[in-house]
Image 1 (tube, rainbow, N blue to C red):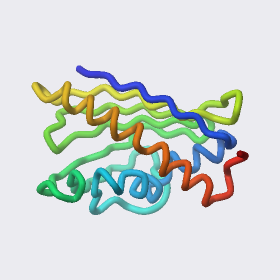
Image 2: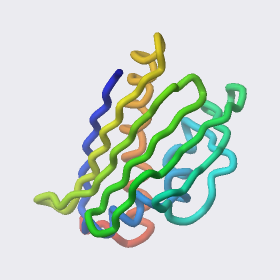
Image 3: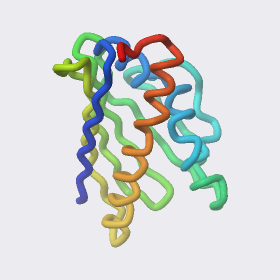
Image 4: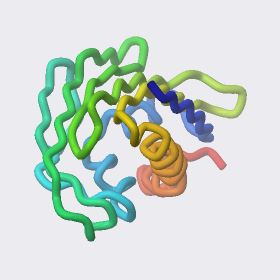
Length: 149
């Protein structure tokens, strides 16, 4: 089992960052350069949601079925958990949470990945993907008038 831990800080309120974090339209925009996600619904994700999509890396690989089940989501604690699989991934357990930070808020993503012998490669890819979401997330927050700097 491989692990990913990515922390990203933003000059906005935790509620503003949480609104972007649970917004599937924002997820599509943040992933657009690296992962094409066909069939992703619009709106906020919710507990119990079962999402079946096809994904293609950079829009160039053969589209493959990928499933995301949102097992928990709390607006009160600003956190979610999901289990995911597909595209060579046996298990992708994601815990995302938004916390207050000295200069605004932070998003903490913790992921446990099992992709068999490909686990080290998938973990490396996940680190790159989650860090690459920072700039598009900043732009989304800026477009929503949420950034304080």
